[in-house]
Image 1: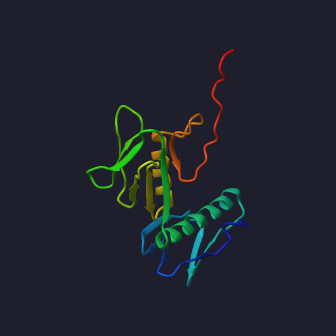
Image 2 (image 1 turned 180 degrees about the horizontal axis):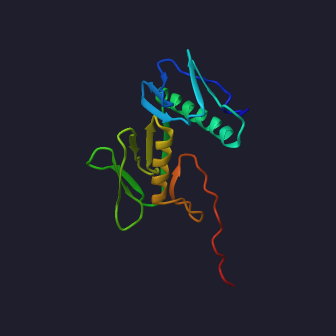
Image 3 (image 1 turned 135 degrees about the horizontal axis):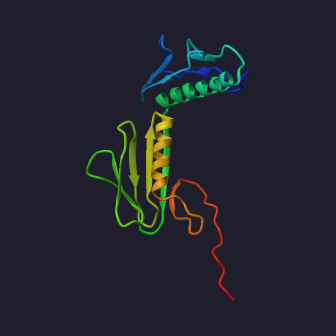
Amino acid sequence: MSRIGKLPIAIPAGVTVAVSSENVVTVKGPKGELSQKVDPAITVQVEGAVCTVTRPNDEKQMRANHGLYRALIHNMAYGVSEGYKATLQLHGVGFRVEMAQTPNTLNFTLGYTHPIYMQLPKEVKVEVKAERNQDPLVMLECADKQLLGQICAKIRTFRKPEPYKGKGVLFLGEVVRRKAGKSAAK
């Protein structure tokens, strides 16, 4: 039995979980509504405030899907009740971020010859914090963990952290492993 898959999912107060006939799990809560199509062989049962995921056999793919779908449903239940947050830090001289004129658009200045504009989905709430003598911060909040991770990964690709000076877009609290530069010739 999958260690992750066999765990029951506790449904928080104010959250409803529904399973359709096509095996689509829909989770509604105070932060929004999310849905996920589940493999037809996997059964999802909702009993009161507990949701359980079961599999028909012990084939390798079934074992993998069992834990996967249990984790996805758990992430949806947590996302619509509490929400997920991520904070990115822009570390480098002259690196800036600001909200553009159009709604939910960020304007990045990351040392290139041009500014980078990024349009965010409407599901994501964004806040920019730029204080004097401190690195600018981008705080993102969303009910969908997958969407939030994709957006953070996309922002990081604009300027990945480099190991020599440590400049780039980092998660708050992330430590970049530094390398020594080339030594002077003698």
